[in-house]
Length: 83
Image (cartoon, rainbow, N blue to C red):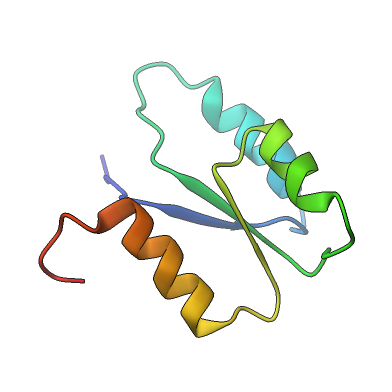
């Protein structure tokens, strides 16, 4: 019943990792998935592309830099007055 404008998902989680969780989200019927941003400390070269190929819309490496987060939010919501 909740509607989200964007999902921030850590890659390393206890039960399921972020990739598996994203794949399960995409299989849900009748649920429109908002942009999903992977959060990870995995900042090795080529990882951004790997996460995008897995279906994430965006990638942010930890520690998250405020200007990168702000830029990403503006990219998706620049038409909203609250930002």
